[in-house]
Amino acid sequence: MTPTIIQAIKEFKTNVQFENANTQRLYFRALDAFGEYIQETSNLSHLTTSIQKNIVVLFTGWMKDKRAYALPTRKLYQSVLRAALRFWRANYEGWITFTREEEQEASRTSLIGNVEEQTSRHERLPEDFGNVMLKTVMRTPLPAGTLPRLDVLRMRALIVSLRATALRVGDLCHMTKAQVEDAKVQFGRLELRMEKTGRIAHCRLGADTMTVLEEYLLARDDHSPWIFIQHGKSNRRRNNSAAFFKNAQKGYGARLSSTSAWRIVQKVAGLSGLDREKYFTSPHAFRHWHAKTLIENGTSLENIQAILGHSTPATTRIIYAPEPNKRQIDEVETTLQVNPYQSHKE
Image (cartoon, rainbow, N blue to C red):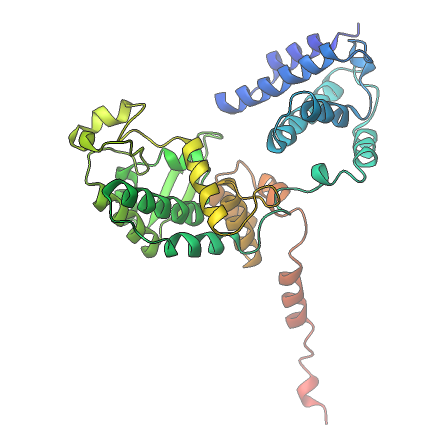
C-alpha cells in the first residue's frame, strides 16, 4: 500500500540511525519543513507516488519565496530531501516512481540560468580570504579605553583562530583556556571534539596564533574559562569564579555566542571591503579557505579530513574537492614527462 508523504517522513524518522543528536535535529527540521511544503501545495496529492522528478527544485523555490530561508539553509534542506528520497527508493519498492538519475537530470534542467542556486559558497569565496581578513584585523588600531581595547583584541583573536583552526564557529566559541594550555605543551596541537559530528578535529595553534590569544587573555585578566567571552558594559565581574562564568548566560565573562562571533566576522569583512551579498564571508568561509589552501598545497584528503573533523574523506572530497587539483596534476605531469635521456642527445 502506497503511504502518504507525511507517513513516509515518519517512517524515515523512525528507521534511520543518526550519528549524534545534532544531526538528527537538523534532518528532522528539514523533513518537517518538507511536510509543511506538501501540506501547503495544492498541485500535489499526498501520496509518495505523486512526488515529481523535480521535487527538490520545487521545494527549494517554496523555501526561498514563501519562507525566505537563507541560501545555506535551503542547500542543507535540499541535501536532506535527497537523502530521504534515496532511503524511500532503496527500502520501499514503488514509493518513488523515478530514478535518482532522472531526479538529478530534472534538477539540472530546472536550474539553468538560476545563478543563485548554482553558485556554491566555495565559488563565492573571496580570493585569499584568510590572509585578507588577517591583514585587516591586525592593522586595526587599539583604542585607549579598556572595553574598546578588549573588543579589538577579541576581534583579532577570533579571526586569527578561525583562520588557524578551520573550526566551525560554534566549536571555536566552546574552546577553553585549559585546552589552549594543553596545546602549548603539545607543540600547538589541539584536539577538539566537534559538536556536530562527535568527531575529533586535529588543529594546530602556531606561535603567532598563540601570541594573539595570549595578548587578549592577558588584557582580560579574569577567571572565565572561555577563550571568547562577552565583554558587557562593565568588567566588574572579572573576579568571579570560573564556575560562575561557566554557567553564566549574559554579561562580562559569559561565553561568546555564535551569532555574536558571526557579527564580528562580518564587521571585519566590511572593513576589508568585502560585500557579503556578493561574497561568502561568514565564519564558515575560513573553513573553506583553510581546506582549499591545504588542497592546493598537496595535502591528502585523509589529513584534511582529520583537520576538519569530517566522518570520511568522501565528505571532504564532496564539499571541498569536487574537481581535480589541476595545478598539482600539472606539476606532477611536467616532472613525470621530463625525458631522462634528453641530456644524452647530441
